[in-house]
Length: 272
Image 1 (tube, one colour):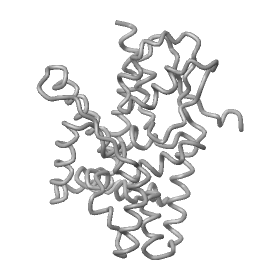
Image 2 (cartoon, helix red, strand yellow; image 1 turned 180 degrees about the vertical axis):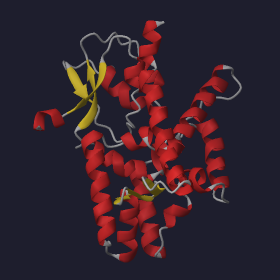
Image 3 (cartoon, helix red, strand yellow; image 1 turned 180 degrees about the horizontal axis):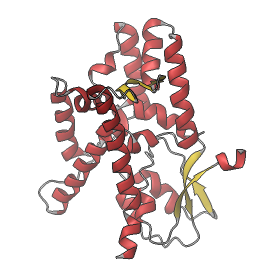
Image 4 (cartoon, helix red, strand yellow; image 1 turned 120 degrees about the vertical axis):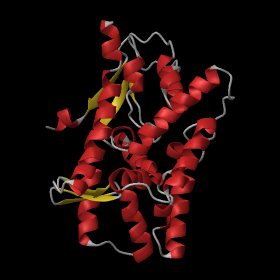
């Protein structure tokens, strides 16, 4: 029982973090507490502008320039994720990601009961990153924002249901049968943060010593290709950081590992 508490500690902390951030948005709108105003697409935290980096790219491609407040907001956000981990946004901040994770859990339940077949759809995330930017440039609009599941869910929580919620429901129902393809490739927000993962100070480390190659970590990872290339690598490597644009830093590998072969490490301690 003691081991079980340890296993699920990070998972519950993630849920609390995602809900708390959404709750701050709601309270700022409903109760006017002015701590975190706006939505995940663009917000102000106690007066400091915070801008989604991909929206900044969209504005740059449509207007061929950026207002000062967007530059400040984007740099602030990028600096935060550079320090703590590129795609940590997807697992620790994004409410759509949390809902999608639950849908994926239900999907595996249905697969185990042979109600549906196991199917996986993978999309090239860089293709879609370029695609959304080109469409924005051609149309002169923030085209992706009409389909931005992250922004739609964030606004749904804060302001209530809108017509765009139907699109999110359609995506979630499709993911029930084909896996987390939205987060895995179509969403450019995660792709931008994923690019930051290669140079960010915060990463998850795999330590070979003690690893029993039980593959529990691979089984719980939503993109099994990420860890299989590391854990099943028979090269003489004692430890390795996960440097993959697909890793959302959900820490399921840490939670599932009984030998303690995974841990989060931040290189900022070497700088300070």
